[in-house]
Image (cartoon, rainbow, N blue to C red; front, side, top):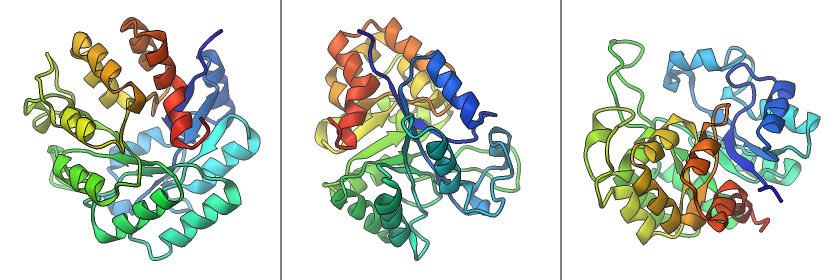
Length: 293
């Protein structure tokens, strides 16, 4: 019997994929379902380099760059293949009402993706995240450290979310909410060195006692989303460490792609994980997070 597979992090109209192309690619890699996530932020917080992965102008009559309307179109066409996520910008005054309506009207299961140039433990964000805890809804967080863009405008860097101290404060302040960490600023914490503060994708052996490992051992409401180059490269740089890491935190690791192709599955196969660990990562933990397991 083959493993069921859930891609717990992806987006509509992403990297040139229409709904039909998206589902065909899921079939190619035996992916049963995908969590389809929004990205809502003001235009001034979007790095223009991201435009090349969006199939249309990101603010064409909707709250962008990846609106809930785009997700709904995919779900309407392929109702069994997608699980809806929605993450309103918590700074908007109608954010809580919009999220509650999306849950009640469209069965939204995930608050994601939060990718904003704010500290994620600010009062507006905390109110939204505590609401998610009450509704048993996991929250997907994008963390990105500030790196120079080699230009003065539009911004010298594009940071999102804060740092590991921000994450720890958030875990403490919202103990009833499950958070999925993602992206370079999150995965740089897997290692106990400071390489992640100087480059997007550190290489070389993992140093012990990384901040991410510390937080996982301390807070049961922290989960890891292995999607994108950030998760892939973090788990590829020291495969001996990664196999131990995935075994220790097997109940809190979730498979996702945030892109297309099969490199994340291939990496998990290469690590030769025990079948029960592989099963949890590929779909069991995702189901648990949305109350379906």
